[in-house]
Image (cartoon, rainbow, N blue to C red; front, top):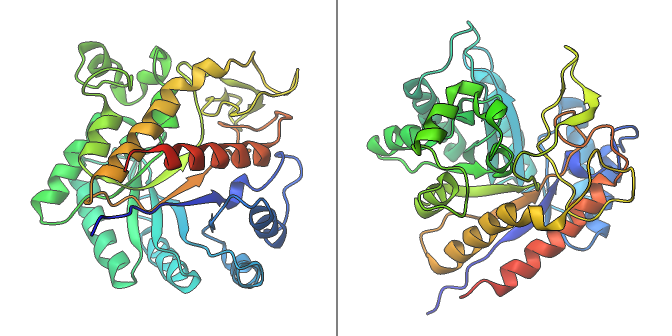
Length: 329
């Protein structure tokens, strides 16, 4: 029998808002996502005080909470991770996106071995609750040097377990032609030597490696472009501007975005999506289960802009569905 690959498309709770100035409550967010008509689920890891409201809204709107995620500091947040996995199970989530910070609670930079050991523990606990932990490629995390991902995966696989990740390739794309960002975790030298290839049009690029290795079990869809403009409309508490890891998917009205918009610049980001879809459609071993649209209003992303965050998530989901329908079976 021919395998018919499946994919579900969702929206993160953080993306169910039009701006950073007026954030809806969780019941409104669930209704927005349901009524858009293009999403299969909401991706949300609720704080304790929101848990019952999310569960109620999910049931009332018939919109499952199939994915969740949070960020963790090793040496401090192991118990938080376990609590979030239990919440995820109670909500019916199948995957939990794990953002593991670069530094340990005592301040040292996590080693590959430490990340791999935590992955093994997280995988064991998660699978006992039928929730797959997926370690995300993300700024401010151990994985921001993208060469580390395959190294950690090899350590995990050497222990007999599959490595599962969340692919958010906006974090890769915005570093192309961006030496300032490449300097984070001293990755620039590896990029310039060809040891780490960011451009999805070039052979051996990191996204293609991760996809081919069947690491990608979950994905976040938020567009970015090479050398993405920094967000000069929002600042962190230390006064620095947002890093700029979000580019509107649909043409903004004049003045709604910090820079001129050019649809052609989205092509590298779109290329990775198409390659991910083609691989998932062709390889029965592909673990990819769902993709969460994640245009968000945070400082490094869309804060301070007046284009609609949610409308961009809807437009992105429509495009994703169209591209998935065209993927060769």
